Length: 344
Ligand code: PHE
Image (cartoon, rainbow, N blue to C red; front, side, top):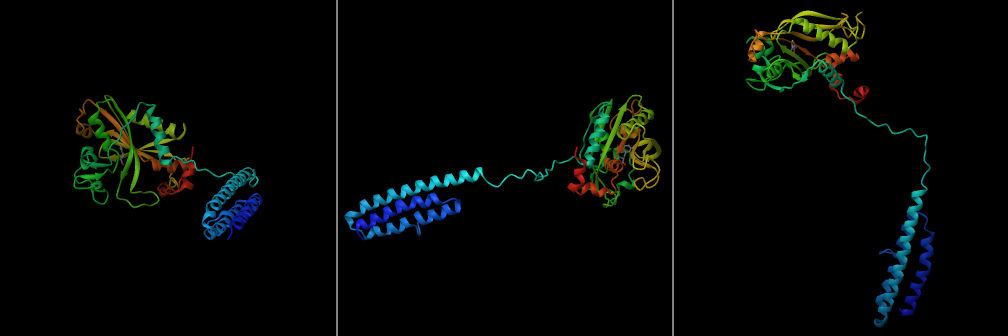
């Protein structure tokens, strides 16, 4: 091939190329044009360059330089065009549809049991109570022995308690925190102890093998059952409604004497009877009583000098009667559609 023929085809490309580049009006068209002009495989420039070897030796230098200049000019024009196409796409694009519904965002919500715990703590905080915590893996002395359970009490049976070892249990109630607190802090003591407890139960509509409790404890000189009744009634009026009726029924716990369970008039049927209150008109919300002298002594206190009262409440049960939840298992399902209803 002659140098003149080689240069002529380069000139042809140098004039045709820019016109084709300018005509590309989309990124797809642009990339086709680029492949056709300067593509390594089948581009026109590569085709022409393949002819370099057929030129006379002394002509190759000039031919190579001219080819390079054309290549640079084409690449410059291509880059300019690509930027122009991209800029045009960014400003036009499909029209904005202002009638389209917004995307729903999930805000998260506080679990109803946590809501109840927070609110109970808030109400008792106003009365001077602070929060105390204890371990969920507990020794059987704190869980039973110090709480005046007799050695053969059925609660200690393998059927009811989850043992971690000979002497270690998953606490079956939050009452061991009473003893731990009294050992650590001298009276006057006014604490709430929220936390999880474990029992060897199967899940059903009203039982769970793990659930939350809130313990309350007051110990000082001269504390009486009247304090217990007045404080817990005040609590019920704050938590449910100022006109909620309450009643105390005699009960039994090894660690309190006397003991009482507190009922509130059913919030769902206002006392006339429904499925939530099992048609009794009342819902039991807590167990309570005067701290047994043996418990005060186990914690190292003089039971002649000090008296106290305590209560234990299940916030899941409370949430159920307050929100009318038909089955306790819903509280453990982590179903967002259920939890979302409690967003605040
Ligand atoms: N610990 C008792 C229970 O789990 C509740 C309770 C606590 C009763 C404190 C009286 C005083 O059933």
